[in-house]
Image 1 (cartoon, rainbow, N blue to C red):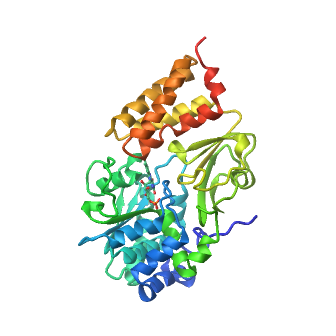
Image 2: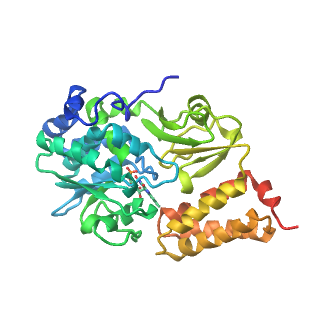
Image 3: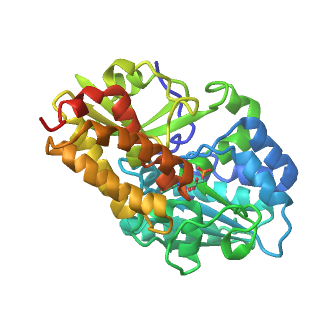
Amino acid sequence: MPQPRVVLKNCDVIDPKRIDSYLENGGFKALAKARREMTPEQITGEIKDSGLRGRGGAGFPCGIKWEGARTASGDAKYVICNADEGEVGTFKDRYILEKDPFTLIEGILIAGHAIGAKQGYIYLRVEYHYLLDHLQNALNQVKQKGYLNGFSLEIREGAGAYICGEESALMDSIEGKRGEARYRPPFPTTSGLWGKPTIINNVETLMNIPPIIMNGADWFSQMGTERSKGTKVFSVSGDVDKPGVYEMVLGSPLRELVEELAMAKNIKLVQIGGATGRILPGDKLDTPLAFEAMLGAGAVTVYDQSRDVIDIIHRTMEFLVEESCGKCTPCRQGTEVMVEVLAKFHRSEGSLRELRNLEALSSAMMLSSLCGLGQAAPNAVMDSLQYFRDEYEKRVAK
Ligand SMILES: Cc1cc2nc3c(=O)[nH]c(=O)nc-3n(C[C@H](O)[C@H](O)[C@H](O)COP(=O)(O)O)c2cc1C
């Protein structure tokens, strides 16, 4: 079934280096409508009614976040676009930044108008340094044409740390501190960047704003499932013939994405949502891609029958131990212990007691870690124990 293009509609259609090409394709009409015809309250209401949820991983309702910042009191407010894209297997934001920076900027400016912010930042992961001039070129043209209208928008480069994609660590990083997760509450909508009301949204979330403002919440909410509206952009990689970026209506079956579009065969498992994401075995490909089940930021990594589950989980945990910021004990110590235990299973030196300990440790980390990294780090372990327990049991020392 052909999939609609909402987020990617301008990709490979406009020339991302020329604002005139964007304007010829309807660019900045949504911003004009938002500024001239809508009050901030109407905009946040429209976004709430659309059912748009954050595309950066947590799936938080966008309109509720904006409403919180709009009604918060503060002499300054900020909009942050999260372009850190550090999740393993994710490259859809990069694709968007390369092919349609103007819609993103338009989305940020609408967000600024909706919450009453005069300043914003695009936090660009340092590995995307090669995109800095490209983005700055788009921003300069937007400024020259007068669309900023007093709003100051700056690009800040990240520091090469996975944790700096986590919203509170990201704000520390912009403030010039070492990126570490903050205790919450207070939440960013009331006390974010420099203690001021702040909204932080993923690149893809902000790409949805101009089309929602132009076409209305009803148009948007007709696409998708009960709790997952609109489309989602997926980054598909691994054992597939056609890796790449695909946009699909939420609720579409995983099978359509990996087998029909990405042309995967003999699937053993699919990791959805990257290192902190979930694992599904090859016999569950009819699962709908929606927030109701699992999604994360939309990284879909396919592994075929030749792959070793324990090796995949061990490497996933090696990444997480390296990237844990170390501020809270459950994540700092928990990921270390998990790597040690998984290494033993990898060498076929595990024990049944350690299997039980892995489960207990997973629950403790999920309940007591400070941020999403530690809370979600055990996902892959837990899912692999659920679906591939026999592979662990085979690696128990004789
Ligand atoms: C360890 C960790 C890394 C994260 N990395 C990113 C990231 O690279 N990009 C992103 O948009 N969100 C990332 N997030 C999610 C953000 O904390 C936050 O939920 C998101 O920026 C909110 O925007 P959204 O509501 O539009 O999704 C990360 C979260 C965690 C716990």
